[in-house]
Amino acid sequence: MLTQEMTQKLNEQLNLEFYSANMYLQMSAWCSDNGFEGAAAFLKDHSQEEMQHMQRLFDYLSDTGSLPLLGFIAAPPVEFESLADVFQQTYEHEQLITRQINELAHAAMTAHDYSTFNFLQWYVAEQHDEEKLFKSVLDKLALVGNSGKSLFFIDKDLKKMSTAG
Ligand code: OFO
Image (tube, rainbow, N blue to C red; front, top):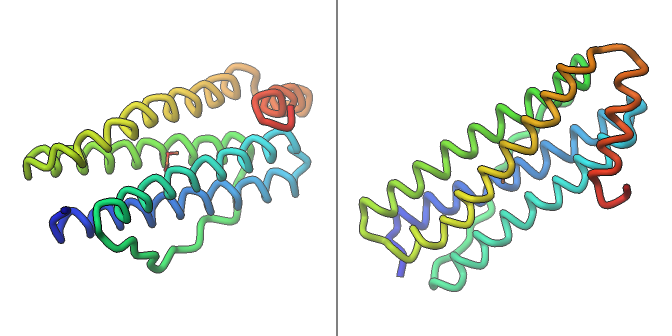
């Protein structure tokens, strides 16, 4: 049985994962609109991963006898300056999610809610991978520069990293 406070915190995270899914899907639309089909496929895949993050929380809440609550989800950003700007924002967003997960794990530990603490370990490991992944794309972008040719190859690379590749 979860405390009311923990239920609320997990529901906030559930909605944040929804926001992440929407954000990556919106970014995917921007990429596609700007001719970056590889980045679009990569981000669309990632949006689906975020839906799985959301679903995991939904199931945990449900399985522990709490009610998952789908609330208002803010609209994600629509305009981006460049492909590098898109990936800079993904990286910053993942860093924010990591901070949120760490706070959740801290709250669970402090409340002696070891079941939730244990459940959150999956997210702790996942955030390590997510930050690494987006940082690697950013590093590549910084390395090759901003010419059309470089971006074309980066986009091809991202296509390979997606399920469509
Ligand atoms: Fe990208 O990790 Fe969930 O939000």
